[in-house]
Each structure stands twice: as C-alpha cells, then as structure tokens.
Image 1: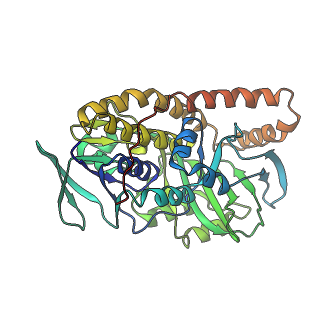
Image 2 (image 1 turned 180 degrees about the vertical axis):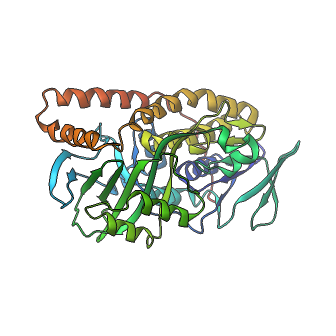
Image 3 (image 1 turned 30 degrees about the horizontal axis):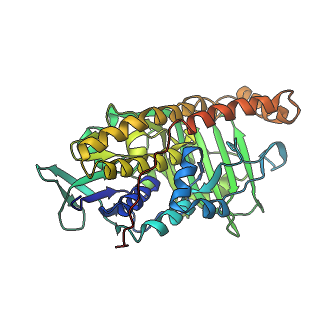
Length: 406
C-alpha cells in the first residue's frame, strides 16, 4: 500500500483511538483539535462489552482500571444534606468487568499510546473541505492548507466536518429534551469514592469523587422545556443555569458559583445524531459525529472505541481503499450503535422529575430498593439488556504490522 494520508478532526475518544490504530497500520495520520490542549475533566464514562476488548488491545485496560472512579455509594440527600436514600456502587455498574473512568483520564491514557503514531495539532480547526479526484483539500483556521487522501470527522456532537459535508445540523440532531452541565468543583463534602445527588422538581444536582485530592465533579441536569442558549456562548450557558436553579436548596448556590470558575465547564443538550450514511466520498464520520446517543445512553465511549478500531481495521484490510472500507465499517457498526443508543430514549424521561409528586415518587422508589423483593432480578434483567447491546458486535482480528513510531 502506498502510504495514505489521513486527517482526523477531533482529539476525543474516537479520534485518538482512530489515530493510534491507523498509525499502527502504516497510515500517515494528523489529528487536529480545536482546544488548545487535551481536554481534561469531563463526566464519568463507561467502557463495556466489546470496547473492553479494544482497550485491552491498545494496552490501556489495566491502566484504565487503576484510574477508575471506584464509586462505592450513591446517596440522595435532602436540602440539609441528610442522606435519605442510597444505592451501592456506581449507577450503570451492571457488570463487574465494566470500567467507569473520568473522560479526561481516559483521553490521557489513549493519547499516551497514540502520540508516537500520529501528528497532533491543537488550537486549530477545519474550516473548509474540497474533494478532488486525488484527495481532499483542507482549509484550517490557523494552519496552511493541506491535502489529504481522506478526512475523518471525530469531532463530536456538533461536528464541523459533518456540517461541511453532510448538511445542516438541524436535520440530523434530535434533542432528547434534557440539558446536562459538568465541571470541576472543590470537594467540600469529603466524598471519598462516593456520590451525592439532590433532587428538586425539574432539576437535579450531583457531586462525585474524582479520586483527585480536594476535587469533585458536579453534574447538573434538567428538562430543556424550550429554554434558549447557545452551545458556543458560555455566558448564555451560565445565565441558563442561574435561571433554572434560582432558589435551589442544598449546596446548589455553591455549585453555581464554582461553575464560573471551573476551567472545564461544559453545558449542552442531550441529543442524538441520526444519519442515513456515515461517509461521503473520501470523508467519513466516527463516534458522536456519526451516531451520538447522548450522555444518557451511557454507551458513547464504548461505541467510539469500537467504531474507531473497526474503521481503522477496515481501511487497513482494504489496503487504503476508502470506498470499500467505509462501506464495510458502516455495515459492521450501524446496528451496534443503534442498540446502544436505544437506552437513552427511556432515560430521558426519568432523569429530572418534573413535579413535586414525581420527585417524591422517585425518591421513594430509590429508598425502597434495598427492601424490594426481587430487586436483584430487576437489576440483572437491566444489566442483561445493557450487556447484550454492549456485546452486539464481534471485534475482528485485523493483522497489525510492526510499524516504527513517527
């Protein structure tokens, strides 16, 4: 194979994983990332099923387990901070083999492996793409124009590459009606591998241990109810949180204050990407850019890891022929992505009880879990459904040649 040049837009889980494998297969890979550095922090994410196999093949699984959040207790508290309900372990820990880890920690592990196999360009972005008979001419916000054999959009929910090639975002983005915000805060609660959640009608606030001394992660979630904000304008996002959480009890005022100070503040809609195809000519999409299930699915990381591995493997198997590889990649992954994203649709209706009555019912149900006959059977059935989706694709064995680092 004549060495193929590939531009990967986005240094997230999908982008870095793809860069690693393409580099291992002998492709000349460049990763461009809008942020000035690798993104740290982020919410806790899960590695499950087929994704565990991919993580092991990359040599990051043991390190991911060592960096896992290891949450042992989830407590619900009242306005005074008194514990009123609880569950053992982390939410979504349906299988002891699953790994829950902070997104930033996983990115660091992946980048450590991929750095020797790809060029990383930070603080830049793709602004224009023009496909020719021989490649894709790429214009960047800062760097000089370059031409690549292929371009892969691994640039998330609001993918610039998808917007340039596949049309308007409004045509493919399906809002699930829930807004989520995450950011780092000082740990004033002494969490120590625990998580605390405060629920009021129409709004939820959670803090979790990060395993970093003195640090915690805050997660705020609430129904969108048509509230306007701009995902690119942080001031409008701060204003939205202030509006939604005005008068909230417990430690919510402290969280709102810290949101403005956090270096990793994030707020956006929980939304899904639904596309009829994941490639067009020499351009393809992977991870959230192709098939985001929203944070409510709990499976975005696993789909990204597996998708990037398969896309790279199919390109190698097709000797760099993008037409063959892109088609095989989508054939293998589309049903896997659909099954894993399905879980989010039900979760969207339950994450933030809308009325006082629904809130009381929600907390009562949590309180009753330790005393509910058959509770283990219920969790087992839910876990079986999640595991079925997480393992709904066979991870192929693609031959990996010995390739010298860049």
